[in-house]
Length: 177
Image 1 (spheres, rainbow, N blue to C red):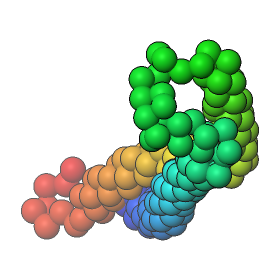
Image 2: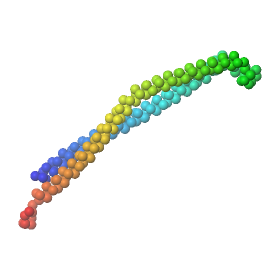
Image 3: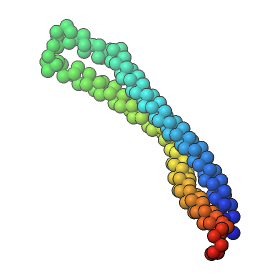
Image 4: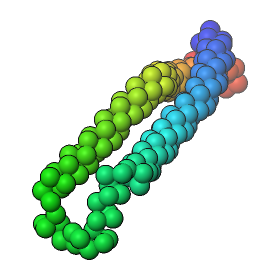
C-alpha cells in the first residue's frame, strides 16, 4: 500500500511542483517587465526635467537679451561711462538690481511650479508601477516558498515509493520477513 501511495503522491507532488514553477516563470517575467517600465519612466522624467530646466534658462537669457533696462546697463558699461560698478548712479543701480531680482524671482517661481508638476506626474505614473512591482515581488517570494515545500513533498513521496517497493518485493530466499 505504501508503494501505491508513494507513487501517486509523487505524481501529484510533481504536478504541483511543475505548476508552481510555471507560475514562477510567468511572475518573474512580469516582474522584470514592471522593473524595466519603472526604469524607463524614471529616465523619461529625468530627461523631461532637464529639458524644461534648460528651456527656462534659455528663456531667462532671452529675457535679459531683450530687456531694455539690462541693455541700457550693458551699453553704459561698454561706453566706459560706468566701467566700475561702484561709480554708477545709485538710482540706476538700485533700479537695475530690483529689476534683476524680479526676473530671478519669476524664474524661481516658474522652476518651482514645473518641479511640482513633474513630481505630481511622476508620482501618479510611477506609484501604480511600483505597487505592481511590489505585489509581483511578494507573489514571487510566495511561489519560491511553495516550490521548496512542493520539492520536499515530492522527495518524501519518492522515498515512500522506494520504501513501499521494498515491502512488495518477493522474497526469493524462502526465509520470509
